[in-house]
Image (cartoon, rainbow, N blue to C red; front, side):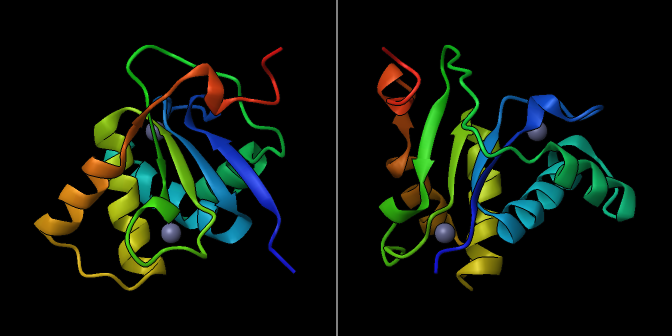
Length: 135
Ligand SMILES: [Zn+2]
Ligand SMILES: [Zn+2]
């Protein structure tokens, strides 16, 4: 059975607040979010940050299209067919979060080639990113 799919919108986190949205299985989102908080927002990892992230997890995809945001499906990268993690947000925040996810979850070597692959796999966010909410 597939792990429960959840969403985390960084803008809902007090004191964090960038436009990155992380989607995926519960435990991996929490791990990615803590690494993101540390590297982008200088939030110390620990019980407080973990509780904050868990409380912000949502079952509903946030509808937050904004100009210039990108989308990355981890599955679009070579050799990641089974992965359900995806990101929406500013390019540099996505690249940073995916590099961390690739290293810890997929045991990938963090190289400039990997970073190039990530940048090539980025797509523009469009209304079609949110098929359920648009009518
Ligand atoms: Zn953020
Ligand atoms: Zn992945």
